[in-house]
Length: 383
Image (cartoon, rainbow, N blue to C red; front, side, top):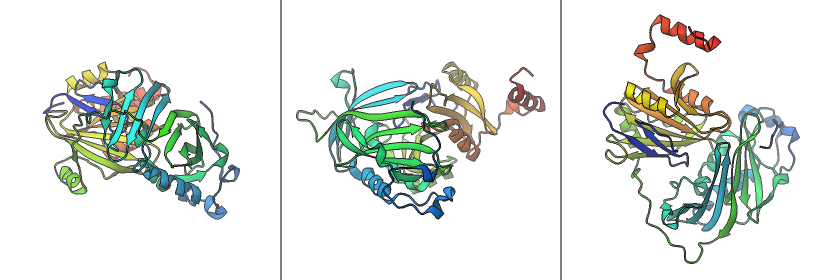
């Protein structure tokens, strides 16, 4: 990548840490497609005429909407502590969390020394404590429904179940909300086959901050410059894509810039998008991809892959590595997309690539190169 040095990026959505340049990436129960007339346990009233038009995504269950709205704001006023366990096909992580409204969330990986505890501000912890934020977007992109027959206890606390159904009537996500406070206690994201692709839940949970809790100094955060609409517009005028939204109903939740000298010799823009279920981080840095960058990407498990009509460097997005990371040069910027979309991570990336297509590759513009690509697509053989 020209005009910059090593870039190390910490993703705010708990999607791991990226490094672009030498580029290092750090970081089931089946459920069938269910028609509207097959659900049980709804507590809201369903308009059968509207249910027939699934693309309209209306009406939502009124009780589900109320519960989600409450949950989306609960963490701003409720202190709590607990142990959260996250599972996906790539492995399991366990983290002790202490949430202090107005100050942030203390997180400590289980097994790590106490000195490794870190305090991150609300919305920037990369932990389950921030997962309530996208819930407010669910109604814009999914039908949300109260499914009382899934109610259970999570970490010993009664929890009410709300589900998100897409325009095809397929279940995409399940949420369990604390009956007493509205806090999100457990969530499951399902893939296109209806299998649980990721699960996060509290194993232990208590309200309040435990006595004797030591609040560490805030973790160093290079993303110190929140970007307003005016700031994003200014960045666009200098060639950065900096989209206001992404295809598929992905709305902008947060935009920040790391100044030059913090994570890179060049400024880096990080935008966080969500449709309520899937989350996408998009990083933008001025420059292009050099042959040395390509070698570094390949050495770290990335491969050139066609996504729709475009080609990019891809890692993950598979059954065993569900988080997808995609890197490509667009105009005078290099874009890195990271998504935890459980249903179709590479489909999400493909839609973004179509909206912000890679710059043409001079080495692949010949007629023979186009024929060779077509041959590989059709046969997987050598041209």
